[in-house]
Image (cartoon, helix red, strand yellow):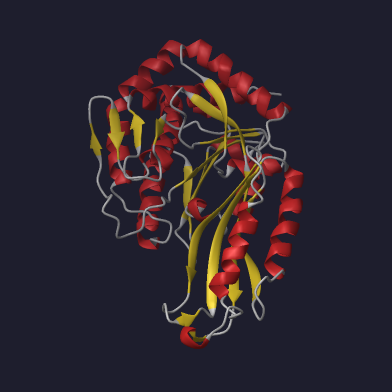
Length: 382
């Protein structure tokens, strides 16, 4: 059985890269609704050909999403496949091409995570064409807003997760064939600082400058760093009108990563305290949370799913190891619901979120085989 599945997946390699190129060349930055709608339509067509019960979930505020099920998924607790169709690259990016060399494929989202979408689609296709999928309950959900925090899809992901026995998330794999067993949590927020405008030539040392107050706050926020468990980065600073004007406004955009669930409460208390404490007279500030995700902590359910993946990798002769990442994904939401989840099932690569993003081509077949085998084994789990 395993030899038949491996052989069939290898025969599909050319089709995999054809689909990958098609998807990569659809510009699908998170705010490009037209591009994301085209992505959703393209994926539904492929899933319907498997065939699966596939539909587009229409969205007004963001790109449309994709929901698909096998026939068995409607009768019991399914396995859940989760991926995202959006990338970090804006619509006007010059990183808008796809290319391959002898060992790698390059392009926007090729690792994060259009390669993972291809792995998911072709694992299901191979299982269908070899007769295995008839007995495997699978639900597929591909969202369009993961890169900005899954604000609109979070509730759908959580609802699908609690209906499922286990989940596989199709983010890219690590360079040493890692899947992901844990991730830090995240809080993203903006601090809006308000001062009072005036002419710099008439101001004394006690001027009510929003930028000066923001500078104090940058030091305070950066002081929260406690690596490796707590990582804080003030990554974007805006403010002021001109060099000869006292700044009436400033804005800090801050990213916080943390390892322990309890850290979220402590960090929010400190964030609010720093926000409401002013060092510069006649300035005040407010905090606006832009995104948050709980940490994905390795637990018994996740370890059991990883053991299943290890056994599958040995059976099919595939390399496999595990890691914890500082970056977040939709697996964070799934793990917080107590559902066993394995992340990083997509092809292995590196340099995502940059114009050097790539995947290692041979891992496309490897990861498709691993996912297909995991679905077979997970369907038999107690």
